[in-house]
Length: 184
Image (cartoon, rainbow, N blue to C red; front, side, top):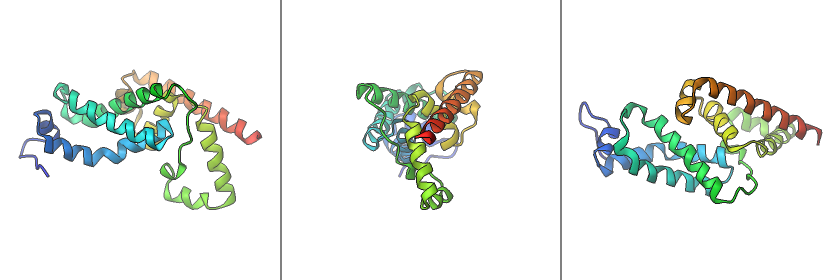
């Protein structure tokens, strides 16, 4: 594994063409990019493809990254765009189900073992299918990854006010979809 010399980071080394440093970056972030893709796309194969596309695009675009300390936000922006391309590639078919075990905390997994928990998890999965890619992306970045809205705005390349508005609308749509699921 490539070690960054004092005063240099793996990102800086990778930006200068060090394939070993980039490989270390990929290994350390692959799971996070896959989980983000899974939350947005709802399909394991599509999420794996999007993660791979993310790292291919990152390697190609890395020399243009000006601020190495913004690498993670920059990489997540590429990941969201890779998810958009993957969604277009599958011809705007219906959005597939997100395996909730990937999104639940340990406490929620315990709750899911009960009948009420299973019913709630199924309702959430079904409700998420009604959201757009952009709505899933903002919910995943903010709630799944725990990113503050200022960071989400940077990743999505939108103003903070727009991120707040989109998050509000995504939550409202999810609430509406959950209410509709509860009536079924």
